Image (tube, rainbow, N blue to C red; front, side):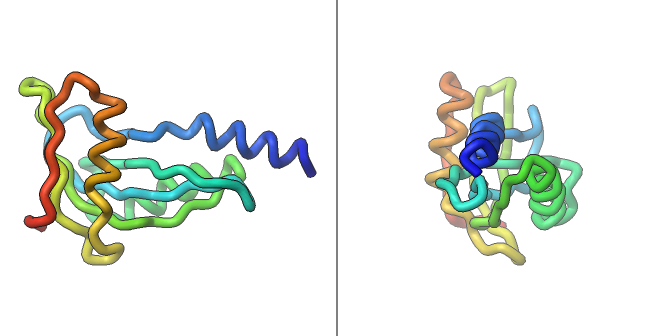
Length: 125
């Protein structure tokens, strides 16, 4: 059992904290990913192809399940990513999942994009 737990912990460490599109305005979800029975970590996923927040969540959940990882959605919102200005703004909410904690998302983004100006606001849809 220990070997399996170790493998899952390894899988968790390989899950990127942030995967978002390189440009544009798009929906995002904040998710908590866990190895079975183990500690979890929060990850940000944001993509322009998604018509609904659930589209991102379901696709990511499927990918994670193949690696033996569980996840839950903590909420959603929108990202405005302007690479030419090195700015990301986090705002809005998901009708289905509720509003993500944008401050958590912002911290994750700052780690991935240390040279960006990253802001957030609770208003907006």
